Amino acid sequence: MVDREAELKGLMVRGLDGDPVAWRALLMEMRGALTPFFKRRLIGREADTEDLVQDCLIAIHAKRATYDRSLPFTAWAYAIARYKLIDHLRRQGRRHDVPLEDASVLLAEHTVEDGAVRRDLRRVLSILPMRQRRLIEDVRIGGYSLAEAAARNGFTEGAAKVSVHRSMKTLVASVSADED
Image (cartoon, rainbow, N blue to C red; front, side, top):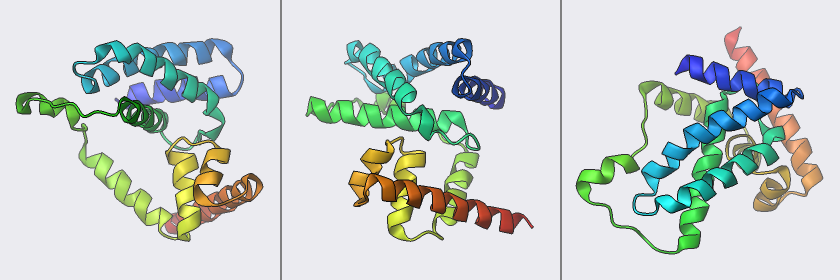
């Protein structure tokens, strides 16, 4: 998994740096990874899978500027995928019953490391005031554009940009101070 993460992150970084071959390769790799991700979660509605994959790839492309190169790529990409899935299910407006024996596909596959990462992330973000924290979570973790996150959190787009920049500096300084 670590090698896969490094490979995808490398493609993302090279794509962000303007390498069209790496960008195309990343989108193809993500297509292959997202298809089973959505199929497992759309039991009985597998026909919607391709539409969701396309929506997600478009969002990854459109929101690529929000990706923080210091963070894992797959966490960022799958956060976008989860939001696209949630939006899709909300638009459907109906609940789907899943037999108990098939319910395991609805549960996230977590590792002990995932829990530690979430705990560390909560701890680091806790130093920020709540408004800035929600803004950082939306832009850097949730995959929202700066304009969307600003609207959700009561900022103008300019103020949100400044707040994200300052908050990230504060977070980096706090993590750097912890390492000393």
